[in-house]
Image 1 (tube, rainbow, N blue to C red):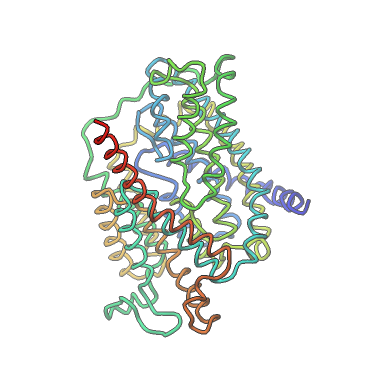
Image 2 (image 1 turned 30 degrees about the horizontal axis):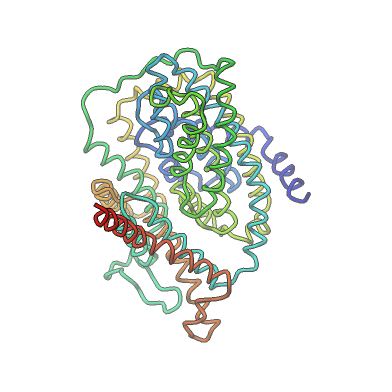
Length: 502
């Protein structure tokens, strides 16, 4: 009951003209960046961080929440009309959505994506209201060893799950941990990895890291791969669904929501896995199996619902534990730290008004997105005609201004360029970006928890092991680490048995 009263207070705070305008601005920006291939919500929030310094934290996070949800909506539009997902989480939507558009059913595909996103976003945000406080109650009883174990799990899981190989994932994580180490050690006062450069004594601002890696790196990568000519945009048609489309979509919407939220709430769960599982599930359950591969509406409805439900799920560990599960959550976590707010179990106690206004803003933004996306999709499609050189020139300009605003020193521009080149190299060699960002944020936090655990145990290494919760988490880490080896041994044994049998 207390949670519902707090949520009602959040609605009272969000339903003011100023906050509603900020929410509308957020969902509009989110939809726009979600639609434009190569951009993303993480980049948009990173670019806006310096601009929002003068805003109240509550207003800033209302905008960020709208951008987060809006990006999930917008990514499906390019996937359906251009065969190019605007977000990585919309990759599965391409499989059936583009075929539907080719068959003259682009309007129906866009409608089921928009309505499914609204349904899933609403269900998942309701789950967020009830699950997050339970997670907070669990987290309050944890000590430094348990937090250390959970952070190590987030680091290992993020590096293991993302990217084309674990080596690339852990390489990205290592880069992030090194960047997070730069600066003055909080305990000894010694400078680490500054190489005599006084500007590095305070470390590298996470805003500069995020803007450099996402914005500058993406701009350079897109410029390096730029093709001549324009992409073909399939006409949209009437954006609505017939009775048969509704009948075939409501089941996938509900199943996608049930799959997306828990996967989003798991560290390193992300949206890619549940969207793929949703597609596979709908393909098995559908009575229209012959349409899959040729434009089945279930193949759009389920993955898009899973995509948006996963977005709400990622906010559970970010708010309750201070752990980011995707790139956008990582940048939002950096935004909390920029405002001097530490997400975690005490967040609901110290910043209760901010948290519940943010959650209420997600409900409001989700409703705004449905209104924006259904009738205005033909207008949004015109954004896809913006020439890429103009688009990324603007991004580089705002990235440079944002980096300079963090300290007012031109040295930040050189750091921004260096990080942009690192981001370009990581994209060139298929190294995922998220483990690096997570390493920059969680690395110093994990180090602080490890030192606290050692201090409490008098320097004994056994103090790092903690109690049953930490043991369980380390067991999960061991399973993640050994799983590839077990899979390799199983394949070899199977191959040997088949060789003997023949």
